Amino acid sequence: MSLHIEIHSFSYKIGGIPVDKSGNGGGFSFDCRGILNPGRLAEYKTQTGCDKDVQYFLETETEMPKFLDLVKSIVSINIENYLSRGFENLQINFGCTGGQHRSVYAAEKTAAFIRENYPAAIVTVQHDEQPQLCTDQ
Image (cartoon, rainbow, N blue to C red; front, side, top):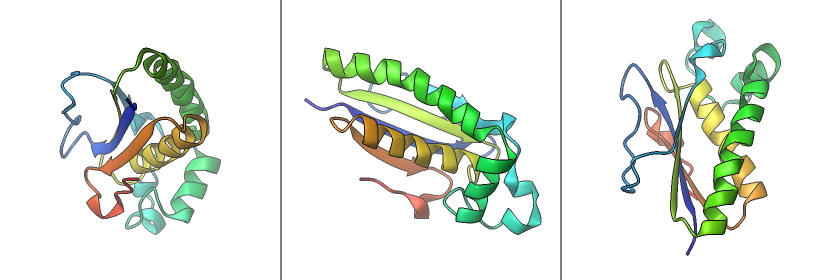
C-alpha cells in the first residue's frame, strides 16, 4: 500500500477549504493570507505562484520561506507516521485570498519537498482556482 498525498491550493473567497474525499475527513489546511500578497502589485496581478517573478518575490520579499519551513516540519511528522503505519491518504491544503499566487506557490514547493524526501509517497497537486496549472504526477 502507498501513501497518497493530495495537495490543494484554493481560495478562501471563491471555493473555500477543499473537502477531503478520501473519507478520512481531515488533513492540514494552511492559511497563506498572512504572507504579503504579490497579486496586489500590478506586475504580478496576471501571474501565478508558478511564475518565476512571483516565486522570486515570495522568496525574497516575504516571510514565505519561513512559513514553508514550518509547514514542512509539521507535515513531515504525519508523513513519517502515516508511512510507518500503512495509512493510505493525507490531504494538505493551502489557501489564500484568490488561490492564484501564495497558495499555488506553497502547494508546488511542498509537493517538491515531499517528492524529494518521501519517494514512497504518491503526491498529486490540484490548483482549485487555477486548474490549468495542475501538476498531477
